[in-house]
Amino acid sequence: MVTIEWYVALSVTLFLIGSMGVLLRRNAIILFMSIEMMLNSANLLFVAFARYLGDLDGQVLVFFVITVAAAEVAVGLALIVAIFRTKHSINIDEINLLKG
Amino acid sequence: MGNPIVFLILAGVAVVAAIMMVTSRNAVHSALWLVLNFAAIAILYLILNAPFIAVVQITVYAGAIMVLFLFVIMLLGAEQLRGVTAVVGGERWQQVLALFSGLLLLGVMGILLFQGVGGGGDTAVTINSNPAALGVRLFEAYTLPFELTGVLLLAAMIGVAIFSFRKKRM
Image (cartoon, rainbow over all chains, first blue to last red; front, side, top):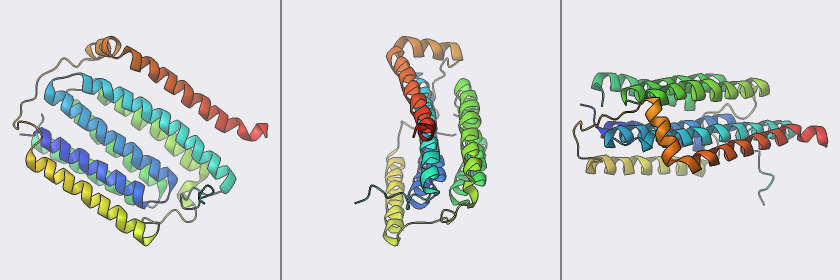
């Protein structure tokens, strides 16, 4: 039988892989994709617990998470394009203009 | 909450796709692996009695958002940029710190699963999760957050437009 623990384990594993991607990669676009995957693992946990507790609120919250993710991706990719126009690079180690 | 064999297959596909997404040198390959990951999770949503969320996941995430990603990757030619193709970047101490925090998170998960999250067993309650019930819940209990979502999307839209027009004005 698949219990809620299996879903928690899968969700945390995906979150862990996503956070490793954010911490170790230097390509800004892949960073954004890793963040998307972390949001997605949280969504999976919301839906799993909505099923486990018999409460529809978890599924409603997933909509809000998806909306925030969509807005974040639109603004983030526009930022990346704007940075690429001025610096001709999306390596996040080279974006250090505000570093003292 | 589902057949163990189906769950294990889908979880395996999702985890392998996630690892390939993070370790792939080519950004386009990363995006395509992420689409596979989203598709596997969408099927898990179907198993979890959330059909509408599954369809939204496919259309919004795997459709709209990933197309936006691929569009930007190909617009910038980002799959062949200098200095960003290395799988592991940054200073040495940053890598060590990253691995340490990853192990910490893994330890927290281990403790959580060891203690047990729920009462155990397949005690899933059957809920009426068709789109109509979901819509009623959304508009009855979450009206204000729903309106704020509209404001958020408007703000994002204006922000993107300002970013795009900035060059022409200067």
